[in-house]
Length: 422
Image 1 (spheres, rainbow, N blue to C red):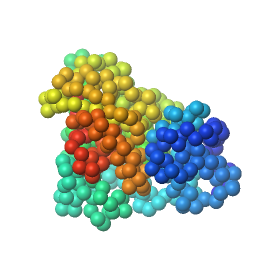
Image 2: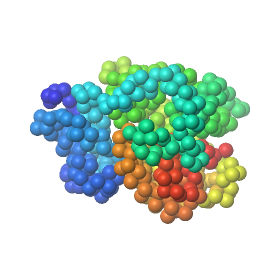
Image 3: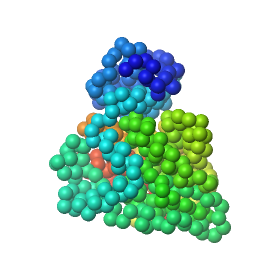
Image 4: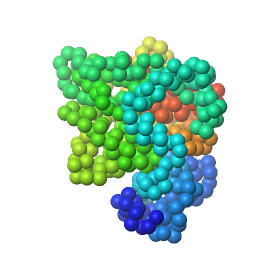
């Protein structure tokens, strides 16, 4: 690939020179802590991209795989003296590499023919819901053991049960506000709360309605595209998804989601996917309205009176910071304020609450065992907090922590933030 073909990297070329090569990232990178190789570091990945752009390195699958071995947690940037945003460079490089090499099978097929098409995804998961009892035995709670013939996605992996009744069959398109309406917002469900945990989406919408918010649940919305463009670098497919989502929420005061990854991806449309002035304007207008529900409740509604369901009475709860919520979006104190306000529940801060759990979307699929090694340290921190319940605000983190707890036979229950609020 010639220098001029690195069009996406070219847009962040200034960032390539930000790295001071000081190595501070070595002390905090979750991948480097497990592998101890220079290519695992932000510094190393930055150098790889520079060598690719200069033509000193030839593109090959092994080199591309090194750029995919990053969770995108932004811990490197948060601890970098120069604030070099290497994860953004990595995403741009993935896009250029995907354009040149294509995507690894079967991910390209899944992203373009399933994730990008909500109807197809719904049909596929409806079939999975009917077959899961036969093919995937339960391990604990709602987790199931992935069958051996799918071991390429992670041998021993525990995955959640697919819901019998999807969210769009449980919620009307418009949920009226209780009492006087203060705002009219759109609810972005994301894939997990649409197909796997619809009860979380239902709680979110009902809570907002009780607080005077009219909630619109557009049926035409689709996947946020995080795995497609942030993970795989397929910007072309992601633009179609972004176009649909931006149009679906026109005319609303805010777009509220209870998924940290979705919130992050939706706010990144303009930065990564806007290839025309029209798209830049539409994406910026849309992204400016996006709020994670924790931020919306505390910062917009200024709510402070929360209570927990009776089943959490007397429980000790701790909080895991999703990387997309904390470092990407800057939402850190809001969920803690909510948890600390819950009557009958004792909140404790776990050590390294903001340390990456190792999920990282596609990273977990490509490097499952490495992902679980990273999760083990998080599990140790949870154990040190001596909590009964781990609360988080990202379905991906929730899945990762529950999978790790099941593998390590830990007793802590992992739940969504919306599970502990009434």
